[in-house]
Image 1 (cartoon, rainbow, N blue to C red):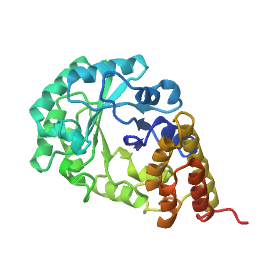
Image 2 (tube, rainbow, N blue to C red):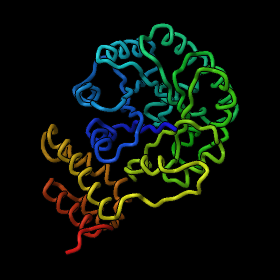
Image 3 (cartoon, rainbow, N blue to C red):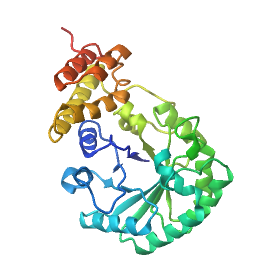
Length: 327
């Protein structure tokens, strides 16, 4: 089983990736937040530089519906030593889909087919794809799979929801199984993505799609940074087990080191307190679950206007978290 970290815009940056790899690990591949322009800005360049991604596999993701843009970005990434790029056909955001990009590209399958024909003919790198199963109708997925089957896709990551569903409701795992059945015998590897947040949800997936060979985790990893270690300890024949191999005190110590590395990483290049606070507050929307932070404690983080105030709020959470040091 391969495990991947999903790309999440503004969150899974090289700062976060390095900290996660150092303190938790268990991840076979990290996907970067998407690139959409031929010219990289300073933030994008900093994120994909090889020296900022040492010791683990990284695949940059591209968001575009223009073959020329895709190929230009891929060629630049090749210059930085990358061998694979990932096409984003999964983003459900209205601002993205309105331009027929991300999951919105799935609404015009003929255009998508022509686009894929161009990029597979001209791209110097391997191409993987992250996709949804359509916009809103069940018949769309079979048609999309027929298109995908035509191309030498290195790996197809399926988030089995329609674009209109965003992240609501239960993923349509039967659609992932349809992909397994349809692409059987082809060279296309498959990866599942969607609502893997625990060993229990992982086992539920394997119960419905037992031949799954790769899983991509996004929000579940942000809420529980040791989830990849947890999933690697699970054997399909065993019953779900949520127990961590770390003691509560060890878990808290690892989390504090993980958090501090991210904080110092952002403070190291962001001007002033506010940009760093914005990043950290967004992360705490997920991380608070891991250390059982109360709403009142998270409110103190959200209210912080200076790094010094933020640190006091974090100390308050950690001082009451499971595994805290005994006075």
